[in-house]
Length: 308
Image (cartoon, rainbow, N blue to C red; front, side, top):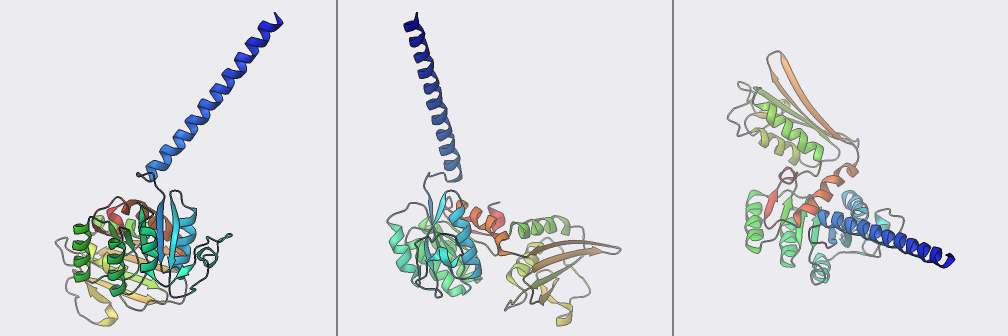
């Protein structure tokens, strides 16, 4: 009888162990499914940050290094050359990736070792941006551009280049999801108003109106109406006229707050939308989304709103 109880007990233990192994396997399988859903190829996205020593670049390195399914694989800048990218970004541990002042060298070293590579370009020089994207595309890497403003001819040329090579590129005038939502709300409401004014405030900006203000004004244009009729003079004090009569008033402030407000009005009524950015970390959800989506693209897409 004792022997029989021992055998039964042993079978129970083996049964529990079997259930434990099955449960563990199920959890591991579910984890792989979740990871694969965020990255359909099942590969870690290798990201090269061009402009790694700037404020946006440092913040991007910190965000990418903590994000699931991607990792910092290269850092490029003319500043802080030779220093560890993780140290420059303020991470607790170094990434063992030095900042290098040679984009082609970094792209070339990665192109043979990854099937999911993305270059994030924070360069503010539009001519360099155009060349950088062509270099990344030539090395088989996708691109996310969120720095310089591309001229229409350069944008068209780059779009043709990406389409012919079947390589994705996302050009994002803003990485702020909040700014995109403001734009979409304003476009939906603009049909009901005859007056439109944009007021922007940015710290240490070199050219006004800013790219974001111009993009917002253009998104409200082409809707079949002219805003501010009867008051389209070009007096600077009344703000720059952009698009279909939309006035843009630009302020340069020493604060770290970047804000944009649109006021839509008609006689007796004003509707306003305002968005403020106080920390560049607020741009990182948009950046991570752009990196994850661009690996699926085979052409150039303009605007973060196209992938939301």
